[in-house]
Image (tube, rainbow, N blue to C red; front, side):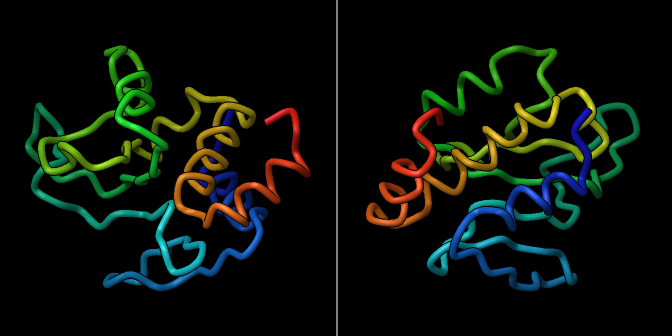
Length: 134
């Protein structure tokens, strides 16, 4: 089962990564100054449907394309979701409390795809050449 610690480890394992602090000391992982994974602060667009309480454990992952986004969020049983705030934005959200529904390999693929979608073409090509099975 994947964990929040896995998100941190996998993001940091990618090359040329920096971590910046968000507005509430939330970690934002970047490559070349572009965010690819970040821990979101509670927002009014991601709430518990029963209580209306804002989710305080949302993680955002960039995706390569709208098709990739759709593939991750179309199954209602998937831990990945989106909100109208992210319409047209190449990213998906997942609650940390649902990461356990993924295994580490699945999470690694999402983190790697996020990094690849934001890295420069040269950095992405270099990484892919070193990881041909990806």
